[in-house]
Length: 350
Image (tube, rainbow, N blue to C red; front, side, top):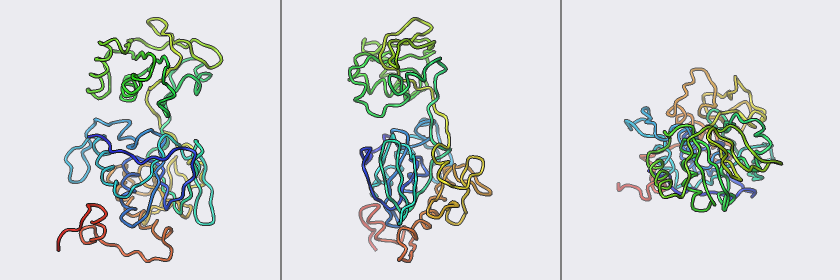
Protein backbone atom coordinates (compact mmCIF):
# COMPACT_ATOMS: atom_id res chain seq x y z
CA UNK A 1 0.00 0.00 0.00
CA UNK A 2 1.54 3.34 -1.02
CA UNK A 3 1.46 6.51 1.02
CA UNK A 4 -1.10 9.03 -0.33
CA UNK A 5 0.05 12.40 -1.59
CA UNK A 6 1.21 14.74 1.14
CA UNK A 7 0.22 18.40 1.28
CA UNK A 8 3.70 19.89 1.61
CA UNK A 9 4.86 23.48 2.00
CA UNK A 10 7.99 24.94 0.44
CA UNK A 11 10.78 25.67 2.95
CA UNK A 12 11.57 29.22 3.98
CA UNK A 13 8.00 30.50 4.11
CA UNK A 14 5.95 31.85 7.05
CA UNK A 15 2.75 30.22 8.26
CA UNK A 16 0.13 30.40 11.00
CA UNK A 17 -1.87 27.47 12.34
CA UNK A 18 -3.44 26.15 15.55
CA UNK A 19 -0.96 23.41 16.47
CA UNK A 20 2.55 22.46 15.35
CA UNK A 21 3.34 18.76 15.61
CA UNK A 22 7.05 17.93 15.70
CA UNK A 23 7.35 14.42 14.32
CA UNK A 24 5.45 12.59 11.56
CA UNK A 25 5.58 9.10 13.04
CA UNK A 26 2.40 7.13 13.85
CA UNK A 27 1.68 9.12 17.02
CA UNK A 28 2.18 12.46 15.28
CA UNK A 29 -0.07 11.39 12.42
CA UNK A 30 -2.80 10.14 14.74
CA UNK A 31 -2.56 13.44 16.63
CA UNK A 32 -3.62 15.19 13.40
CA UNK A 33 -6.75 13.02 13.44
CA UNK A 34 -7.62 13.60 17.10
CA UNK A 35 -7.02 17.35 16.80
CA UNK A 36 -9.02 17.45 13.58
CA UNK A 37 -12.03 15.89 15.28
CA UNK A 38 -12.07 18.94 17.54
CA UNK A 39 -11.74 21.43 14.67
CA UNK A 40 -8.05 22.09 15.31
CA UNK A 41 -5.70 22.62 12.35
CA UNK A 42 -2.14 21.34 12.36
CA UNK A 43 1.21 21.67 10.62
CA UNK A 44 3.62 18.73 10.90
CA UNK A 45 7.43 18.98 10.83
CA UNK A 46 9.77 16.04 10.30
CA UNK A 47 13.46 15.78 9.45
CA UNK A 48 12.78 12.84 7.13
CA UNK A 49 11.60 13.30 3.54
CA UNK A 50 8.42 11.26 4.04
CA UNK A 51 5.91 10.63 6.84
CA UNK A 52 6.12 7.58 9.02
CA UNK A 53 9.03 8.04 11.43
CA UNK A 54 10.49 4.76 12.66
CA UNK A 55 7.77 2.78 10.85
CA UNK A 56 8.95 4.16 7.51
CA UNK A 57 12.70 4.26 8.19
CA UNK A 58 13.44 1.27 10.42
CA UNK A 59 10.80 -1.38 9.76
CA UNK A 60 8.57 -0.62 6.75
CA UNK A 61 8.21 -4.35 5.97
CA UNK A 62 8.14 -5.64 9.57
CA UNK A 63 4.73 -6.82 10.85
CA UNK A 64 3.28 -4.82 13.75
CA UNK A 65 1.06 -7.02 15.91
CA UNK A 66 -0.42 -4.76 18.60
CA UNK A 67 -2.68 -2.38 16.66
CA UNK A 68 -6.22 -3.03 17.98
CA UNK A 69 -8.47 -4.76 15.49
CA UNK A 70 -5.66 -5.46 13.01
CA UNK A 71 -3.98 -8.86 13.54
CA UNK A 72 -0.85 -7.82 11.63
CA UNK A 73 0.18 -4.81 9.55
CA UNK A 74 3.53 -3.66 8.19
CA UNK A 75 4.99 -0.33 9.20
CA UNK A 76 4.55 0.99 5.66
CA UNK A 77 0.90 -0.04 5.49
CA UNK A 78 0.16 1.46 8.91
CA UNK A 79 1.58 4.80 7.76
CA UNK A 80 -0.48 4.64 4.56
CA UNK A 81 -3.68 3.98 6.50
CA UNK A 82 -2.96 6.78 8.95
CA UNK A 83 -2.35 9.17 6.06
CA UNK A 84 -5.66 8.12 4.53
CA UNK A 85 -7.40 8.61 7.88
CA UNK A 86 -6.10 12.17 8.38
CA UNK A 87 -6.63 13.29 4.77
CA UNK A 88 -9.95 15.10 5.51
CA UNK A 89 -8.18 17.44 7.94
CA UNK A 90 -5.68 18.75 5.36
CA UNK A 91 -2.62 18.95 7.59
CA UNK A 92 0.36 20.77 6.05
CA UNK A 93 3.67 18.88 6.15
CA UNK A 94 7.16 20.38 6.32
CA UNK A 95 9.30 17.38 5.42
CA UNK A 96 13.09 17.36 5.32
CA UNK A 97 13.12 20.12 7.94
CA UNK A 98 14.19 20.09 11.58
CA UNK A 99 12.61 22.11 14.38
CA UNK A 100 15.50 24.40 15.23
CA UNK A 101 14.34 27.21 17.53
CA UNK A 102 11.27 28.02 19.59
CA UNK A 103 10.25 31.31 21.12
CA UNK A 104 7.09 32.49 22.89
CA UNK A 105 4.82 35.10 21.33
CA UNK A 106 1.92 37.02 22.75
CA UNK A 107 -0.53 34.35 21.57
CA UNK A 108 1.53 31.17 21.68
CA UNK A 109 4.74 30.12 19.95
CA UNK A 110 6.89 30.82 16.95
CA UNK A 111 8.88 27.85 15.68
CA UNK A 112 11.70 28.11 13.14
CA UNK A 113 13.23 25.25 11.18
CA UNK A 114 16.78 24.73 9.96
CA UNK A 115 15.64 25.71 6.43
CA UNK A 116 14.20 29.07 7.49
CA UNK A 117 10.51 28.15 7.74
CA UNK A 118 8.67 30.06 10.48
CA UNK A 119 5.33 28.92 11.91
CA UNK A 120 3.15 30.63 14.52
CA UNK A 121 0.80 28.46 16.57
CA UNK A 122 -1.04 28.38 19.87
CA UNK A 123 0.24 24.93 20.80
CA UNK A 124 3.35 22.79 20.25
CA UNK A 125 3.14 18.99 20.31
CA UNK A 126 6.40 17.04 20.48
CA UNK A 127 5.83 13.62 18.90
CA UNK A 128 9.43 13.02 17.88
CA UNK A 129 9.74 9.36 18.87
CA UNK A 130 13.17 8.84 20.37
CA UNK A 131 14.33 12.20 19.02
CA UNK A 132 15.61 13.52 15.74
CA UNK A 133 16.91 10.91 13.33
CA UNK A 134 20.59 11.57 12.65
CA UNK A 135 22.31 9.74 9.78
CA UNK A 136 25.18 7.44 10.71
CA UNK A 137 28.47 8.75 9.36
CA UNK A 138 30.61 6.19 7.50
CA UNK A 139 33.96 5.55 9.26
CA UNK A 140 35.98 7.32 6.57
CA UNK A 141 38.92 9.55 7.59
CA UNK A 142 38.39 13.19 6.63
CA UNK A 143 34.79 12.75 5.43
CA UNK A 144 33.69 15.81 7.43
CA UNK A 145 35.43 18.13 4.94
CA UNK A 146 33.15 16.88 2.15
CA UNK A 147 29.83 16.86 4.01
CA UNK A 148 27.25 19.24 2.64
CA UNK A 149 29.36 19.93 -0.47
CA UNK A 150 29.75 16.61 -2.23
CA UNK A 151 28.89 14.01 0.43
CA UNK A 152 25.29 13.77 1.60
CA UNK A 153 23.25 11.54 3.89
CA UNK A 154 19.82 12.51 2.59
CA UNK A 155 18.24 13.88 -0.57
CA UNK A 156 16.35 17.09 0.10
CA UNK A 157 16.21 18.36 -3.48
CA UNK A 158 16.23 15.66 -6.14
CA UNK A 159 17.19 18.11 -8.90
CA UNK A 160 20.47 18.91 -7.13
CA UNK A 161 21.79 15.55 -8.36
CA UNK A 162 20.76 15.93 -12.00
CA UNK A 163 23.65 15.30 -14.38
CA UNK A 164 25.93 14.10 -11.55
CA UNK A 165 28.10 11.00 -11.39
CA UNK A 166 26.93 9.37 -8.17
CA UNK A 167 28.08 6.67 -5.83
CA UNK A 168 25.20 5.55 -3.62
CA UNK A 169 26.45 3.52 -0.67
CA UNK A 170 24.20 1.22 1.34
CA UNK A 171 21.93 -1.78 1.05
CA UNK A 172 18.65 -0.70 2.62
CA UNK A 173 15.47 0.93 1.39
CA UNK A 174 16.91 4.46 1.21
CA UNK A 175 19.88 3.40 -0.94
CA UNK A 176 17.70 1.37 -3.31
CA UNK A 177 14.90 3.96 -3.47
CA UNK A 178 17.28 6.78 -4.41
CA UNK A 179 19.13 4.60 -6.90
CA UNK A 180 15.81 4.06 -8.66
CA UNK A 181 14.60 7.64 -8.31
CA UNK A 182 17.82 9.35 -9.38
CA UNK A 183 18.74 7.01 -12.25
CA UNK A 184 16.58 8.91 -14.79
CA UNK A 185 18.31 12.25 -14.09
CA UNK A 186 21.84 11.34 -13.00
CA UNK A 187 24.72 11.09 -15.46
CA UNK A 188 25.77 7.75 -13.96
CA UNK A 189 25.09 5.84 -10.74
CA UNK A 190 27.18 3.21 -9.01
CA UNK A 191 25.45 1.38 -6.16
CA UNK A 192 28.07 0.29 -3.63
CA UNK A 193 27.34 -2.33 -0.97
CA UNK A 194 29.57 -4.64 1.02
CA UNK A 195 27.61 -7.76 0.09
CA UNK A 196 25.28 -8.94 -2.66
CA UNK A 197 22.25 -9.24 -0.36
CA UNK A 198 20.04 -6.21 0.27
CA UNK A 199 17.70 -5.23 3.12
CA UNK A 200 15.33 -3.30 0.87
CA UNK A 201 11.87 -4.19 -0.40
CA UNK A 202 12.10 -7.14 -2.83
CA UNK A 203 10.43 -5.13 -5.61
CA UNK A 204 13.09 -2.42 -5.30
CA UNK A 205 15.90 -4.98 -5.41
CA UNK A 206 14.37 -6.57 -8.51
CA UNK A 207 14.07 -3.21 -10.27
CA UNK A 208 17.66 -2.30 -9.35
CA UNK A 209 19.00 -5.59 -10.71
CA UNK A 210 17.05 -5.03 -13.94
CA UNK A 211 18.75 -1.63 -14.36
CA UNK A 212 22.15 -3.24 -13.72
CA UNK A 213 21.42 -5.96 -16.28
CA UNK A 214 20.42 -3.28 -18.80
CA UNK A 215 23.68 -1.40 -18.21
CA UNK A 216 21.95 1.67 -16.78
CA UNK A 217 23.30 1.31 -13.22
CA UNK A 218 26.62 -0.09 -12.00
CA UNK A 219 26.67 -2.41 -8.99
CA UNK A 220 29.88 -2.73 -6.99
CA UNK A 221 30.18 -5.29 -4.17
CA UNK A 222 32.92 -3.79 -2.00
CA UNK A 223 33.60 -1.68 1.08
CA UNK A 224 34.45 2.03 1.18
CA UNK A 225 38.06 2.67 2.19
CA UNK A 226 38.40 6.41 1.60
CA UNK A 227 37.65 9.47 -0.51
CA UNK A 228 39.66 11.20 -3.22
CA UNK A 229 39.33 14.90 -3.91
CA UNK A 230 40.16 18.33 -2.49
CA UNK A 231 38.48 21.43 -1.08
CA UNK A 232 35.34 19.50 -0.19
CA UNK A 233 34.79 18.28 -3.75
CA UNK A 234 34.92 14.54 -4.18
CA UNK A 235 36.58 13.02 -7.26
CA UNK A 236 36.29 9.35 -6.41
CA UNK A 237 35.48 6.75 -3.79
CA UNK A 238 38.31 4.38 -2.89
CA UNK A 239 36.86 0.92 -2.30
CA UNK A 240 38.22 -2.54 -1.55
CA UNK A 241 37.82 -3.19 -5.29
CA UNK A 242 39.43 -0.04 -6.67
CA UNK A 243 38.56 3.62 -7.12
CA UNK A 244 35.09 4.57 -8.37
CA UNK A 245 35.06 8.00 -10.10
CA UNK A 246 32.23 10.27 -8.96
CA UNK A 247 31.43 13.85 -8.03
CA UNK A 248 28.80 13.07 -5.38
CA UNK A 249 28.52 10.41 -2.66
CA UNK A 250 25.18 9.55 -1.09
CA UNK A 251 25.79 7.39 1.99
CA UNK A 252 22.82 5.59 3.55
CA UNK A 253 24.25 3.69 6.51
CA UNK A 254 21.24 3.90 8.78
CA UNK A 255 20.08 6.34 11.41
CA UNK A 256 20.60 7.06 15.07
CA UNK A 257 18.20 9.01 17.26
CA UNK A 258 19.17 12.08 19.26
CA UNK A 259 17.13 14.62 21.19
CA UNK A 260 18.49 17.41 18.99
CA UNK A 261 17.35 21.05 19.30
CA UNK A 262 14.30 19.98 21.33
CA UNK A 263 16.67 19.80 24.29
CA UNK A 264 16.93 23.60 24.14
CA UNK A 265 13.17 24.23 24.40
CA UNK A 266 13.33 24.65 28.19
CA UNK A 267 11.38 21.48 29.01
CA UNK A 268 11.86 19.31 32.08
CA UNK A 269 13.91 16.33 30.91
CA UNK A 270 14.33 12.91 32.47
CA UNK A 271 17.09 10.82 30.88
CA UNK A 272 16.62 12.44 27.47
CA UNK A 273 12.84 12.11 27.72
CA UNK A 274 10.28 14.84 28.36
CA UNK A 275 8.27 14.73 31.57
CA UNK A 276 4.49 15.09 31.15
CA UNK A 277 1.34 14.84 33.22
CA UNK A 278 -1.01 11.95 32.48
CA UNK A 279 -4.19 14.03 32.33
CA UNK A 280 -3.45 15.85 29.08
CA UNK A 281 0.25 15.07 28.41
CA UNK A 282 1.35 18.65 28.89
CA UNK A 283 5.00 19.32 29.67
CA UNK A 284 6.46 21.59 32.34
CA UNK A 285 5.97 24.50 29.90
CA UNK A 286 2.31 25.52 29.40
CA UNK A 287 1.16 25.13 25.82
CA UNK A 288 3.76 22.49 24.95
CA UNK A 289 2.64 18.86 24.95
CA UNK A 290 4.52 15.63 24.36
CA UNK A 291 3.27 12.22 23.21
CA UNK A 292 4.82 8.97 22.01
CA UNK A 293 8.22 7.52 22.90
CA UNK A 294 9.61 10.91 23.90
CA UNK A 295 7.04 11.33 26.71
CA UNK A 296 8.08 10.23 30.21
CA UNK A 297 5.71 9.40 33.07
CA UNK A 298 5.26 6.60 35.65
CA UNK A 299 4.19 3.36 34.02
CA UNK A 300 5.09 4.50 30.51
CA UNK A 301 4.98 1.80 27.82
CA UNK A 302 6.70 2.55 24.52
CA UNK A 303 3.93 1.19 22.34
CA UNK A 304 2.23 2.75 19.33
CA UNK A 305 -1.18 2.09 20.87
CA UNK A 306 -0.09 3.95 24.02
CA UNK A 307 0.87 6.90 21.85
CA UNK A 308 -2.56 6.86 20.22
CA UNK A 309 -4.17 7.11 23.69
CA UNK A 310 -1.83 9.98 24.58
CA UNK A 311 -2.77 11.80 21.36
CA UNK A 312 -6.46 11.65 22.26
CA UNK A 313 -5.96 13.16 25.72
CA UNK A 314 -3.47 15.71 24.41
CA UNK A 315 -5.98 17.01 21.87
CA UNK A 316 -8.47 17.81 24.61
CA UNK A 317 -5.80 19.70 26.52
CA UNK A 318 -4.78 21.60 23.40
CA UNK A 319 -8.39 22.59 22.69
CA UNK A 320 -8.44 25.03 25.62
CA UNK A 321 -5.40 26.89 24.25
CA UNK A 322 -6.71 27.04 20.70
CA UNK A 323 -10.27 27.99 21.69
CA UNK A 324 -9.93 29.66 25.12
CA UNK A 325 -13.45 31.10 24.99
CA UNK A 326 -15.20 27.89 24.02
CA UNK A 327 -16.34 24.96 26.13
CA UNK A 328 -15.33 21.58 24.81
CA UNK A 329 -18.35 19.41 24.10
CA UNK A 330 -17.00 15.93 23.52
CA UNK A 331 -18.94 13.62 21.23
CA UNK A 332 -18.26 10.02 20.32
CA UNK A 333 -17.52 9.69 16.63
CA UNK A 334 -20.35 7.15 16.34
CA UNK A 335 -22.91 9.73 17.44
CA UNK A 336 -21.49 13.02 16.13
CA UNK A 337 -23.04 13.45 12.68
CA UNK A 338 -20.97 16.52 11.78
CA UNK A 339 -17.77 14.65 12.56
CA UNK A 340 -18.92 11.74 10.42
CA UNK A 341 -19.59 14.11 7.52
CA UNK A 342 -16.03 15.40 7.85
CA UNK A 343 -14.38 12.00 8.10
CA UNK A 344 -16.45 9.78 5.79
CA UNK A 345 -18.24 12.36 3.67
CA UNK A 346 -21.78 11.72 4.89
CA UNK A 347 -23.53 10.87 8.14
CA UNK A 348 -25.32 7.53 8.31
CA UNK A 349 -29.06 7.56 7.99
CA UNK A 350 -30.93 7.80 11.25
